Length: 102
Image (cartoon, rainbow, N blue to C red; front, side, top):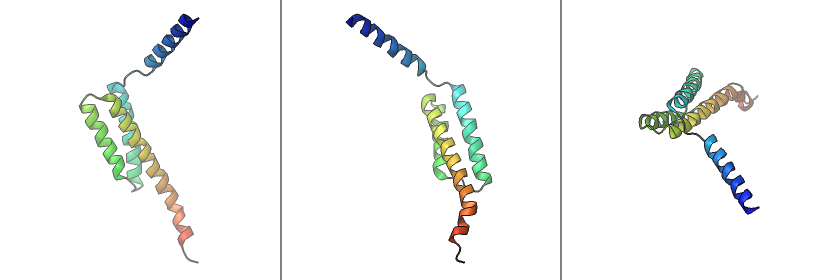
């Protein structure tokens, strides 16, 4: 019985590790393209954030060093920040009306 449990746990760990394959340069390029597109949309709304630019720079630096796992993570963070800045810009387009004294 103990042997079956050990075998099951070993198989499960093998499957989990195989599912967490390392990121590739292609994964990075896909993530970077999405992040840069979101940042461009934020720029069109005149609401780019400095942390977004920092995350993009960190992603490019990690990719240049060959660390694609970190590069993909930074690019995804940059995309999330850019999307948050877009949401903020759109919200603020109408929220200012609530602060006007009538």
